[in-house]
Image: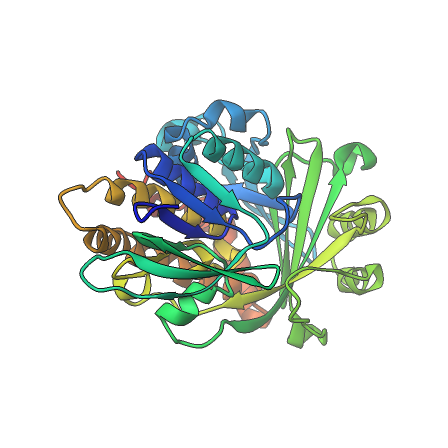
Amino acid sequence: MTESTLLIAGGGIGGLSAAIAAGERGLPVHLVEQSHAFGEVGAGIQLGPNAWHCLRQWGLETALSEYVAFPGNILARNALTGEHLSCLPLGEPFITHYGAPYTTIHRADLHALLLERASAYPALQVSMATTVTDYEPAADDRPITVHLSRDHDTQTLTAYALIGADGVHSRIRQQLLPDGTVTPTGHLAYRGLIQQSALPQRMRCTDVTTWLGPNLHAVSYPIRGSEWLNIVLIVDAMAAGHTASQDWDQAAPNDTVLDLGQGLCPPLRDLIQAVSSHGRAHDGHPWRAWPLWGRPALTSAQEMAQQQVALLGDAAHPMLPYLAQGAGMSIEDAFQLQQSLGLEALSISERLQHYARQRYARNAKVQRQARRNGRIFHYRGLMRLARDAALRTAGRRLMDSPWLYRPIWA
């Protein structure tokens, strides 16, 4: 590794996207990932047109089309009665309007495509089972010193910049912004996958369906060419009397999830039962439980970059899933990083500050809107009735997000 290398901490969607961004600029990259191997972790994710525009610029559109599903609609339904409240069509008029489709994909498939694309750049070096423990800041754009740990051995490297894409519990952030750890939201996500061929015909679906209920909601959508159905059930754990474990990803007992289905409408209850009986989320378990973590919305560019260190994705702005933009914002971050790194008249610190200035306000808006959606999705009592009435009368307009779906350069 040389002092002209960009060091990226984290090999998830954000870190690999950042590696592509640097590769597009012809920059040497050293990517450090704490896992021993890249694997099939996670479940489905949604990619709005805004993310697709960036991925298209990286030459991934054709490859993505072989793995994604193209939902026909986004539906809102009452989780207690099953009533169809509203519909946002995602067909040709939507695609023409935004210039790109709304798609869904398994996280592992997207990750694999990003890894393949990043690996095509000859100047990429990857170190697995390695963690960035800390770094030594340097003034006047001099190379910074970065300390790594691998199997209890330590190593010291130098780099001209460090990108922290090391997730919601980012070590880089803790040094850059000693603002404490992320806080649990008290919400717990139960995620499951099932082959559509294992479902009766009436339960198979090619739409994104959001089921809204008191203190919980569920989202289901197709992935992998619509051969699989992804479902996530998000519950206010305290309100439901559940214990929200702090473990990032763990097997969830079937009985726990089935209990949540009691009192829900038959179509949703039947889907939960089907996943419990025939589903596979990871390692053979039908359900996985993920606690949701959060931070206050960003307030300044300084929270995303200082001197030669920048944060990207969840390390900078953990996104709650109520706007389905966690992956999208990481991809957008990386695309903007690519544009900012190309400003060769600026110093590296100035380029990273430019990146942060371009990104922090949009990320903050998405953070705030996601939190707002979480409250709306889980309304009870009269507020729930008012929400449903609004969706019946103006749902298509309320469910669309022109400010979000247009390409970030528009």
